[in-house]
Image (tube, rainbow, N blue to C red; front, side, top):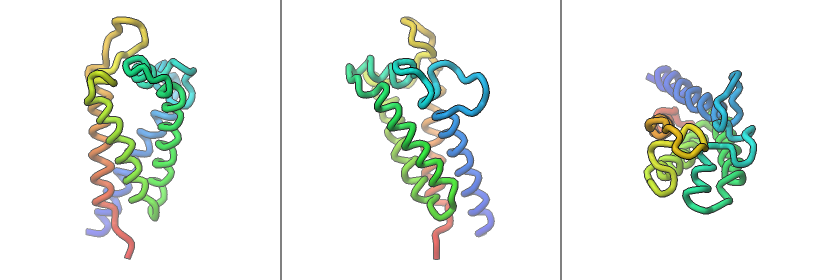
Amino acid sequence: MQAMRHLGSWGLALFLIFMFVQATIHPLPNPPEGSVKLFDSPGQNIVFATLATNTGIALFEPTGRVAVALAELLAAFLLLIPKTRRSGAGLSFLILAGAVALHLMPDMLGREVPLSLAPGAETDGGQLFALAIAMLAASMLLYVVHPRRR
């Protein structure tokens, strides 16, 4: 039973780490424009530019984007180390709960995010919202599954 908890803990942690690193620094070639938090030009990240436009709060882009990216990288680092994995799961839960909350407010972000900053652009059909919910569930499950220290 303990071996299954360790295996499940590693699987969930690696999933969350991959998703956080993918969203912040995008190590794979040819990332979609406007989807990499740390390397997008100011005003070019679709999610945070949409938040800044819809709310009128200019602090979302680029300051909020960089702060969220650094928090995600910290969570990924904490998830990598087994002794700090529960703390990383807690931090990722807080980050993702905020993301889901913003998606649930139609006047802030909404469930469907535009694919580009052009007026009347197509939306993602709720894929980013579904991914945030899946990651939120994974972080909650990781917090429960990861074996506690004795």
